[in-house]
Image (cartoon, rainbow, N blue to C red; front, top):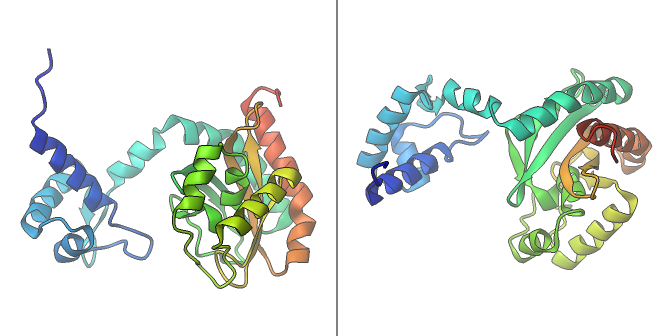
Length: 253
């Protein structure tokens, strides 16, 4: 029989994850002092865990502090669901990029956020707020709204009852307004981000659904400069989402 793991080991494991979760797109390198401050883990414990995480490869030394290590990327590549989704979706996403000349994003839901699992950029247009492996709130993105509109009542309720932070002045932060928006998204099977995640950028997204209309992921194009322009790309995005769903399920959709 395997030996029971002492309770303090679970505490150390949690603290290690808290340290790793302290890194963001804006905080990609942190000193041990900064890690302790951001995470709330005592500095002596932080120092010990950092050494262990470096030995394992989860952290590595950067120019000005610690940064996430290659080992985490290797583990992420082994995650079967997003990986298989990416494998299937990639040719369709590249085609959508060629047709629209806009940045294409593929995302899945994790909690109250979306996680970007693929991004195909356009050289002439920068979309800095989305990055591979990055997160944004469901309610503030076209991708998130496309997924949320087809999510179960418990998931939608949890988002509506939680915080709806405004990323820009145009972010929908009122629960009832968001609920109305989700009903429209579900009816049209298309969602828009009208400068809600970043001013000056418009996005159109469509859900990738299972045969039972359960949300698997969403795909979008970002970079339109007006709502009317974003609407022109809606059919291409919808057809791409449908094609990916059919490919994932062997033509059943």
